Structure formats: C-alpha cells, structure tokens
Image 1 (cartoon, rainbow over the protein chains, first blue to last red):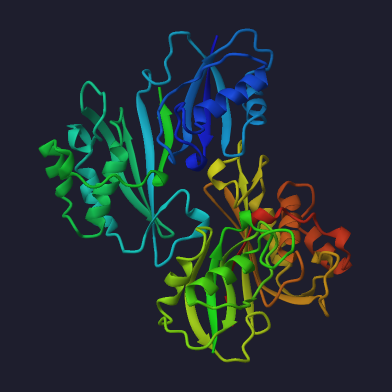
Image 2: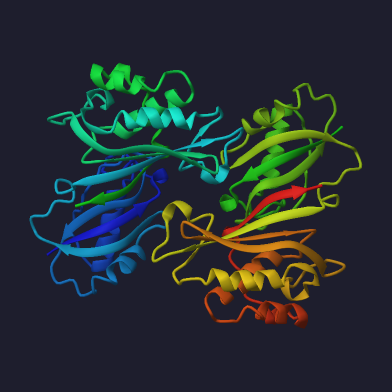
Length: 245
Length: 245
C-alpha cells in the first residue's frame, strides 16, 4: 500500500527537501524516522515539492510504499513524529492508490513569502522572514501581483537550469497583505517553475521599494527574459503552505 | 556617561540573561559584542530583567558606562548588532543619567505568553510557543485573568527561592486573546516576582482546559500558597515585550 503523509518543517537546518551528498536533507531525515518507526530496513519517500535549502513547509506531502503496517493510520503521524527531530512534524497520514504520485497528481500549490518590515530585525522571526529596513508600498505590490494572475508564460520567472518542458503556468491568486509589520505575498497556482515564487517575491519587493512601477511585472512576463524580472528573493522567506490534489 | 540599550533576543540558545559559569548567557554575549564594537577591554552591562533560560525578549533594557564613545548614538545599535550573533539585536541607544538603574527605575513591564493550540505542533513556532493539543476556553481564561488585575499579594504566584522583600505587586492588565491558533496571555504590571508570569500562564492554562473554574485564580491569590496556583508554564512560551520608565 502507498501512504501519503502531510509534513511540516523548519527548513533552516537542511540542505533542502531532496537527498544530497553534502548535507542533511528533509527527505533523508524523514526516511530515517519512518524506518525507525515502522522497523523497515529500506525506504524511499517521494515528495510533492523539492523545496530548496532554507525553505520551509507547513503543507509538504510525501508518500512511501510499505506492507503490513500495524499502526493505525490515525496514530501514524504521532508515532513517526516521535522519531523525528523537532523541526520536522508529520501531521496526517492517508492511504492512496498505488499509481498516485504526490508530485504529478498535484493540482494546486500555495506558497507564502514573508518580508519583515521595520527599523530592526526581530530575532524570533529571523529564520522565516526576510528583513527589509525600508517601507514597502503594499498597495503597489498588490497591483503588480494581480498582473501575474492567470495563465502566462512565466519564462522570465524561472531560474536557469530548469528542466521544465513548458514555462506556461496558471497562477490562480497572487496577493499581498500586511499584518504586524509582516508583508506577506501569497501565490497559489497549478504548478511552479524553479525559483518562480522567489523571483515573484523579488520582483514585487522592487515594486514595493518604488524602484520599479507595478507594470514592471507585466513587462517582465511579456519579455520572457529572466533579467527583466527581479532578483531571486532569499530562501528563508518562503514557505510551502498547501497542496491540493 | 551611561548608555541604555533596547535589546531583543531569541533566548533558545542561552542559559538566560544573567552570567553563569555553566552556559552562555545573553548578558555575556552582549558584553562581548559591545566590547568589540567600542574597543573596550572591560565592560559590565546591567539588565532590567533577569530572564530565565529559553525566555525571549523584544524589549529588554541594558545599560553600561563608557567614556569617549565616538560612534553617534543613533548609529550605535547597528554597530553593536553587527558584532552580535543573529539571535540578539540591539535596536535603540540613549544616554541616561549616571544614577539611572534599568532594573530599579522600571515602572512597568509587559510580558506575553503564547500557547499554540492545534492538533500538531508547528515546527516554525516551536521555540516561541508552547504546544497545546487540547482546545483552550479563551473566554474562561480571560475571566480568570481579570481576577488577577489590580494590587494583590502574589505570594501564590512566586517560585521558591525568591529574595523579594514583599510579594505585593500591581498588575495593570492581564488579558487573553486568540489569533491564528495562538492563545496569547498579556500581563502588564509594576513588577513581577520570580516565575510570576509563567505561574499565571500555567494557572490560566488549567482554567482553559476546564480543569479548574475561573475563580480558581482568585482562590489561589487569597490563599497566598504556591500549591494553590497552577504549574509553572515552560520558559519558551514567555517573551518580555516592553519596559516603561
């Protein structure tokens, strides 16, 4: 049987989701925890999204195949989590068909990118926000964000080295809000190119600072050229919030 | 001249504010940073509040004496912070009279205690909230909180080993609110006994769980007996938010 897990993590200490030779990944740590919890010798989990080093998740999904699991599915999250470090937590487990793929069956993903705006950084939020010592014009950022909604060729918002067949994606929602000094960018879409959300965040940040007008987002889109969009914003501001199937 | 600093820190990695033989304190780390920033050989800072191991601060105050500082006061926070680890930040500096004491001149302190209520812990908030897997009745917690407002003998809310001359304190505000699954207890008063806010948090938590009625807070107060109040809630939920002079 295939089990699908909902996973949350603080990505600060990891080299990203995916297995790497030089660094501890979330995937590897999760696999170790599941193996110990279930007494398995070999196990590979398949993740829905390959989050980069320092990127967080509140709604990552990961699946694995196993036979004869004696722990009831509703107890499995707590049991697996008890074998994981405190920066990773499994909070849901469900059975899915054998041909289900957490990555390719995903219909919608939601990301949140957070800037902390103020005169000084808040040490308690240093791992999950990017500090911005300048005011951000949230209204103009929102205008730029709306220009990215819909089906577009996001080639300008894709980092080099991507192996995607097409750079066309549909963004259902791109919005900006502010609460207690934190400017949050929410991006919900049917799929994302490599670094797409971080490039969107960098583009909106430049609009917020007044360095570019809101229309610069549409101009970048139309150009399909990476250099027309903003810089890739730092990883730690990004969080994978949810995935829908 | 005496300089008063406003300091924020994530207390997770420290043995508390105060110098200790076995562990790294916030005080010691701050002193090292100031010494390097100003080129001083000897320095002692006086803190306003001796926060315990794991307790955080967004508004701690600390002062030191130094002569011939060539850095303008408005640049001092940034310069000192550049010599500090990322979990400590100095964000304000001002000159105060030589006879000013950050501790004894304090007129009002505000603390925040945070419970994260939900079916699973959020790894991103694990250092600054205490996870509670059971629902909390915020209305009843608020009722209990209000009973603690005013001038009272808080002997029941004082940990053993306190050297306070009197256990009478005035709590100007004790309130409970909820936002995005976080139940926050705000306590503002003219001074606090050892572990007082954490014992208040533990007492209100038991009320929130339905284990005790709201009146239990008043009964504990009147008894002046430590065992009548709730358990001391974990350090990591506590944050010193502000101090007024």
